[in-house]
Length: 221
Length: 361
Ligand SMILES: Cc1ncc(C[n+]2csc(CCOP(=O)(O)OP(=O)(O)O)c2C)c(N)n1
Ligand code: SF4
Ligand SMILES: [Mg+2]
Image 1 (cartoon, each protein chain N blue to C red):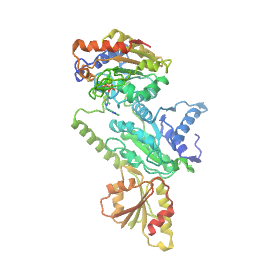
Image 2: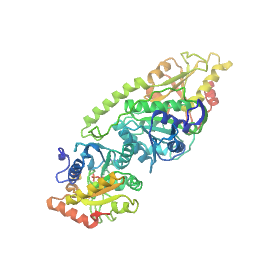
Image 3: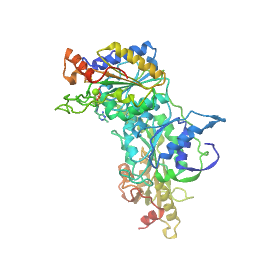
Image 4: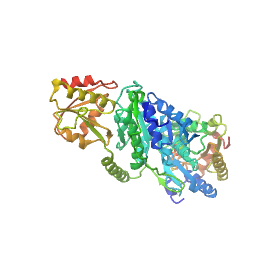
């Protein structure tokens, strides 16, 4: 990955991209993949990897990849999307892709904020978390994506990992890709660093992810 | 569908025939009157199609969760190189703008059949020419879209065929603008006489590509340069695709100048033709030099053709089922000073008698 620099230092996205790329190469899928990006900080990955990659619109990467996959099932269709794109503006299409069991892989970077637009409240913002648009702290429980989808899509592969445990991240991404190859919908939510909007440094950033893990349970669902 | 010579078909059936014949393989859609039958006919066609007695399963479809998804699924499918379309109307045309805007930006060869209905809001479902602005300028960009306005079922077939060819040749979104009346109309049509050779598609993304494609630009100049290139391509395409018709009575040879020029598009142009015909034949109107100018492509607009006629006209009458969306297009493109008046009936049908009356005033 040559162009990491566009992400802020300490961002979680490049970690996800690096592992994804390695897995795709190991599986000899790097030439057989289409990576769609939502609009959010995911868009910064447009030229990060030497694989087919393109930007879409905010909340619309999932239906775009559904269409691409239906036209060309031989390509592994991956959607990289933020928590806002996945669980707010794009929730309807995400749920429907899961319910139809469209065999695409959705990777959701959960950083509990709208990072690209400067740290507004997201569907994943935790109770009492202060953001640009919840200055007094959020009073609403966050959306739990994989848990929500579980009841709607019996065949889907659903997991939640974190960028500070790359072994598990690696394992879940591998399993998710295999699930797609077997014809099933897969979603891996990744608890991801956003030191810029969290206004955290070094160990604090990691500590924030540990805090998140108390609300967002790691594991397969 | 079997190809007999003359067939009695509805507008929706004609659209499906045209899409199949154009080589379209996928439709994504969400039901909305008066465009729903396109989706249901396509699905029936996909399920029952036989080739040489064998079930042909090559046509695909998905009834999506909304028009936004239909539009973006279509964008994804064309990126993979599949001729794909959707059909929508009114509030659905509004929702479709998100995907159309991505297609504008990424130059995706999408085809959208817009079946206009009365607006604003859910309005009515039969007559309307109120989605002209949406079709051309509904996105947050510059309106570089190819928009056809057929006025009968044979043309609906022909321009839908052309829509696919030109989408894939020039990589601009193409919209075929029809309306509830045309879609429900059943007419005897001979589609076989229309011979159009399909063009091949090329996948934007495939196993053989390694592309990194963006639609967000870091610098203003980059986007400015991209738009300048798009505009240049659009103008080049304009020279090859612009279509219009001049009519001055059945069996009459085009005779310029027309002192009075009626301008109409779509099914209203059908009524305007009847009116021009009647006026030309009327004994009292002997010598009344009236003609019809009908833009077939509303975008790019046949400006040269319009000005050629307008130069010699004394008066222009715009007739449309809208409060002036066509008039505004005409005025934008007029380069000569000539009086423009008209008959504007938003979301209502227009009879030829009304046009005759207007011109006899
Ligand atoms: C239709 C639309 N609405 C709003 C925006 C502005 N916008 C861009 S990114 C974004 C939020 C991104 O948050 P998220 O999806 O969580 O991704 P992150 O940046 O946090 O990775 C918003 C609201 C947009 N681009 N398009
Ligand atoms: S704002 Fe946050 S999510 Fe976006 S690049 Fe910077 S650290 Fe990463
Ligand atoms: Mg986010």
